[in-house]
Image (cartoon, rainbow, N blue to C red):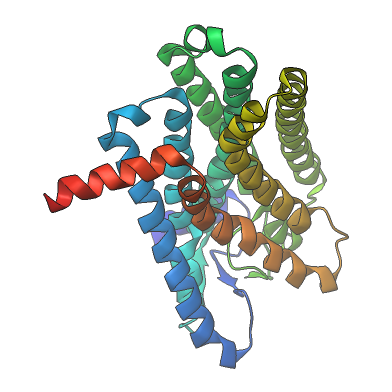
Length: 316
């Protein structure tokens, strides 16, 4: 493996591959967990592909709201392939090995899709604010060009963040310990086994992630506060039901995404909390991508109509 040796030399590291410990080391749970996560992975792929197909095939869903939802499903679909296949392998193999380059690649795409999803959810909150608070100007503000720029910005920030965080990880050295106590190459589990000074990595990672969370949370919060004020002033039962119909799904998705992320990372760094971190990370890596299509389908009349129309086309 000449390329791997070259990478190892450049990093002044004697470790050319890592061992991923997986979700648990209890042998009696391996097969049940494999079955559970295989079903989950299948549901993520089928659910998000179905929602994307519905949006493409039905012209009445060709609106800014569903354009953003298409991108959310696309991210969740791609995101699941970053770590799910490797995690499934950990349940059926004795040693779940991953090369250094493979680990850094997984880390890059994990950071890219997580950051991109965070900003897409923020854009969706802004879209709901414009739709409810400025309905007469909605078509003027949310032009196709503006929607594409917002999505490009979300992906660009996600890409830039991933490049910075992965670039800092590549410069680290890994001497003897190559066992990552996680089911994927996440930033902090990898930092724990490095024999380099990780102060800069921890500082930049905290700054990048913290800035993203604060900025996105603030925009989402302000958007929904303004929506709430608008609904209170209209004091219409129809206004309340319309707002709940258009915002309810997004609020649930945001709560699950940020809630599980905070539980996984905002915690004391001790041995006892490592397993807790892995447990809560399952929520935003496996549960949220699976639930998003269900949340937006079950709570959305337009999607239900699209399903009926598509089924009629297939059966007729």
